[in-house]
Image (cartoon, rainbow, N blue to C red; front, side, top):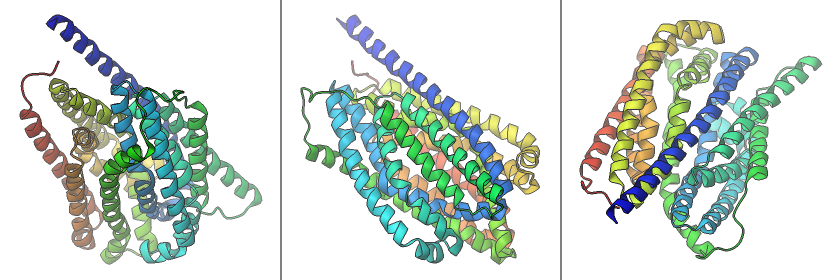
Length: 455
């Protein structure tokens, strides 16, 4: 009997490992294609709207992030967690009920947020973002949140199933539709010899979200019938909100801090001596050009992070401490290897990439300097997913808040004196502190696991 139990447990572990690897490879493949398309898209935008235009476009990113945090991020993660739990209990119909409940909640939140953003675009652009030119972009952006929440919830459902084919497909559809829309609109303005408005970038985003939603809806297949264990809508909503509320609150707080950080960078650069256009240009080069290069290898760690949460959650539920330890060890090793390889590559090729991709020497300087953050940057997202899977979202919130706080201090006090390079070092220090603390916390947690393994 013990041999049979061990064999069954081993088969289950191999199945989890196989689905994890397959899912990661699918997401990574889709992510690489998406990032390659995104590279050409960023190069195209840098030519069409320039560094200052990129800076204005990037100023709207806090609103995008805040909107997603409020309307979908916490719900998506909660759906993934509870779908994984229901599948573990052999109740696929309960998983479907969680999807529909979460989708209903997310749709309501998205509709309210979109309406508020559309009506208050001028106020938000002037009072919050500090540039009235953002108002037309925000008005168009308000149309993106409803379709965004639909495919986010469906993706959460499939992440919980550890099936990443549809999420990977929607990711590609979104990027292709976004880039295609912007290029078509640009071609129309060129043919008519009219000025190209910045709002074309947001129309690309809206139609990208619509395309992604249409693909996910057309490909989704759900189990029919009611199942043996019927869950009420109220109990599903209660469970989802119990988990989603703190996650959403954490994301909102972090996004508000991050928004303040991003908005203050151009302002503090002006104190350093830049004119408004120059400050927005430097900000656009940093966030719109250089960071897109630095983030490219993270497509691998992002794919791993998406599947780490349900995998760790399931391992914790069945008492498989050995799998958790092994996963943590492999995660740290793999992220460090990838990070140091990326650092080495960016140190050698940073200047060339900046000039070759964007025709901008400053972008190359930023890439070379930011290369040092890669080992810590790639560790951050994966270790956060492990903490979420173990049931410690509060610790993740604390670490992210601490990291953001360090960067804000550099923005407020170092940038006016030493310029944008001091902010780059602030990013390095904040990522290093976050990663080291996460490693220490996780190693202490896993050290307290019992040596015996649940059969």
